[in-house]
Length: 278
Image 1 (cartoon, rainbow, N blue to C red):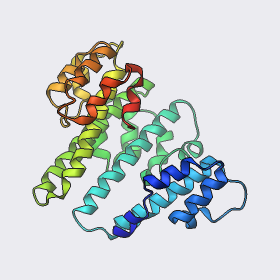
Image 2: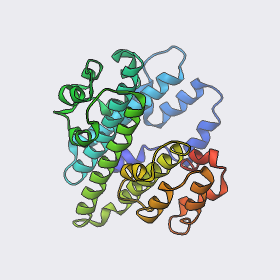
Image 3: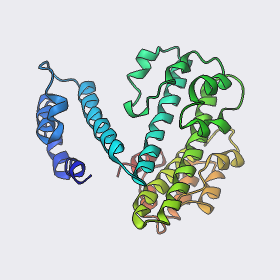
Image 4: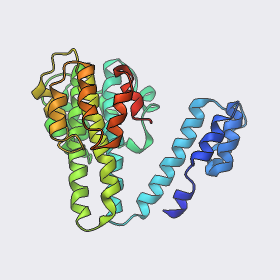
């Protein structure tokens, strides 16, 4: 773990990457920083997609190596991390299937960590029950989808509802497991902070995207994870917001409670997404 951590890019590395004037310069710098094995093949001019794929492959190889060597409780945490990529891939292929895209095309957009044996069957499943029977039933994420799929056919609105519902159940399960593990070790506080951040991020995103829609307060609450710095009072207030300005007003109230929430007070409502990257 210490060896892998030493290979992570630092702030100085990113400053130097910003100074690269071409993709070739960027590739050369990355090759000098533990990416040489992934970037040494191929002599033709690099392209952005290939560079991203090479860097992703390094991450996947390193992650899988750690997962193969991990003992508990790290093994459990790494499994939960993989589940998020599996969920994203399932939702991506569902969305692509609605647009008539092929699995070959869709698989290029999927994350390698999120592949599992039956995922290709998503393109032949004709309804929500078949998705569970043909694709998910033997996967470790089956339980997250069981109570969210329901019956009927797929459309874009349904897929978005499934995405938010599944992530709610997944985050609640992950956080609940970490709370249990924290009782045995005090090393989980940082991970729980990250998971609370993700829970809040999803709550805020749902609140923003539901403005000017027919989604009711109770509908929003059903999609909010029962964890996070905004739970429960902030979530209730956000669920009742009918405009972006009201969302901004609610978040400003929680700035002293959680520092990153105070950043929303300094941006225009249309720029909320930028706050997550500050």
